Image 1 (spheres, helix red, strand yellow):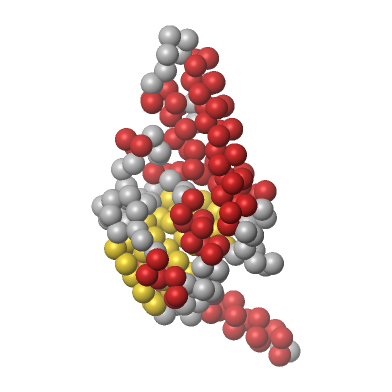
Image 2: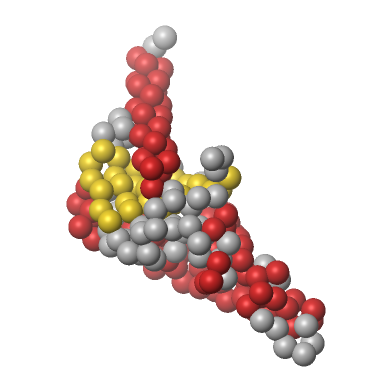
Length: 194
């Protein structure tokens, strides 16, 4: 094995260590009622944690520690009253902005039902403002399409439940899937097993 092969192997082993540490942490926070964030070096060393509220976690105190790290956090369980199915509760504008401005290696989010992962592209993160503007444009299109489907299925008026059935419960994941494809950002949603 040549020198470059051994360097590549060490780098891959290092990244796997960080991802495994993040996954262990995620198993501990997936069902918490408040958001919790953790930062891991690629070798798996836990660098920081912080607690938030039921619908957010302030990552500002972590910004000095997240460059080239793996950042994970949970999206608390039952968000059905927001119209979002926890199995599709992907990244928010804030999550995406933190990942890009903080130059993280990987941003992760876990719910009781799924894990979402976006990884820094080989050429680096695109401009966060441009990505968020595109996310708003894609999101508007998705909302309008869901409203049209709900209205067509319910001519007398539609409810939040009708919107969910028309696709809004998957909104975050579907929008992010399109967004990340547009910007060549590696993205995955994996169902969790309990």
